Length: 184
Ligand SMILES: [Mg+2]
View: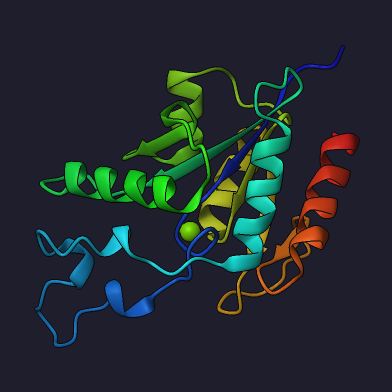
């Protein structure tokens, strides 16, 4: 039997709709909203509906599977708000993913590739990151992982990675990811 394949889904811009205004201060020198204590911005972000439908289909299908696992891998900044951000993101998952297990939730304050390498196991092609951020994708593949670019209407398609698009039907997203699982 082949080795287990692990899908890692990014939250911001993949599972959730990227909200540019959270990250950019209204005026120069102001703290952006996501860094304001008790703003709880990550708990109530809108979901990318088709992407989440695809996630749910995969999550349900592979629950308890020896071949594939489906996980959330999200990163937050180091600092005072780590607990608030972690709890808000976890709550979001509970609110949006039926029967979500805490064991499938990874919220880290180190680069995503380091999070896997330092705390889990070596990064191989069997680790598949679904992310919208080019730097995460580049670092992940440089260390040996497989990356899928999530195009979301803000970023653009890339020739470097297989792509999925949040504007596709959920079934097409699932088909694309499952086809990839078969080829690696
Ligand atoms: Mg992202």
